[in-house]
Structures are given as structure tokens and as C-alpha cells.
Image (cartoon, rainbow, N blue to C red; front, top):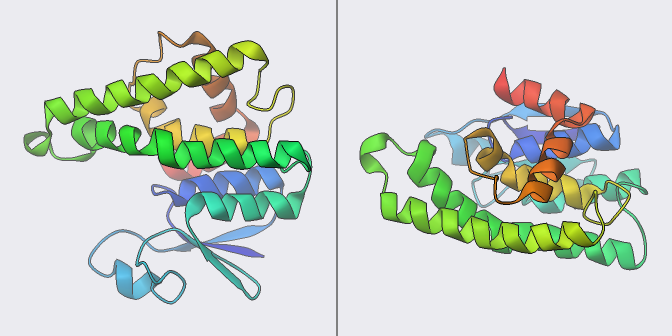
Length: 202
């Protein structure tokens, strides 16, 4: 059984979602934020952060790497082969390197930090960064869709949608990007996503 170390209100949400998509049995080992986090998680993640995964003798950290492993266990269509496998990696790394930094900057200065610690200029810069990436995604979806790799949902959709979930659930303006909005709405409405969201949202 997969053991996901973390809580649903963290990046472990992504891994719970992936496990639900894969249809694999999993257990959430509850490790939350707070002063004891590093001590609680260091045996499975030397970075002292959540999430981490244990799967038999394998231990992994980094949420999207965990998701790629989960998808590989499930196989196609969640993790396709050949050139489409490379495309899954492309969009997953793009989510982490291009989208998440700006999305995080917007989130911290919009709803995560206490109101008196938020920087409106940083929030604006983060929003502009997200919008620039959404414009790329909008153009890509216009060429094929409805999913990132065309007609089939894959772990790439799960990974990118999970990175964008905080923006989606906290009022980011997706209006200028109708194809992105339709894609993201479809992702977060899938049965697996709803199961993960139920754990996250209570």
C-alpha cells in the first residue's frame, strides 16, 4: 500500500489526488505543519517538508515526482508510453518551474499570509506571472484539447491542475483564459479530484 506522509491541506493533496486517479490503495500518514514537522518527517524526507511517499522499500519526496511514480504503477492511460511519456514530463516540470513560483507568490500575498504581512505589489507581480503562463496554456489547448495531451486525461493534467488548485479555489481571475478555465474546471470535477478535495476541504 502507498503511504502518503502529510495532510490534505498541503502539497500531499496532489499525491492523494494522483492515488485516487490511479485507483491504488493508499494510506495518509498525518504529518502537519508546525514546530515538530522536521522531526516528524525527516526519516522519510531529509528536507523536513511534506509530502513524502513510502511504497515498500521505496521512499520518495517531491510531490510531482511522487505523482509520476504513482502514475507509472498504474500505467496507461494515466502514464502513457513513448513520446507521450515525454510530454507528461514536460508539462509536469513546466507546472513546477514555470507556474508554481508565480502562483505561490500570488497566493502568499493574497490569502496565505496574514493581511498585515501581504505585499500588494508582490501579489500583482505573481498574478501577472501566472497570467503569462496561462496564456501559453490557452494557446496549447486551442490546438487540441480537451486535455494536455489531446483526447486522454493523464497525470500531466493532474499535476498541473493540482498546482493551479489554490488559484482556482481562491478567486484567481481565469476569465481571460476560457479554454484553461474549462480544462481546469473539468480536472477538479473528476471523481478522483472530488475525493481528494473532500479530504482537503473537510
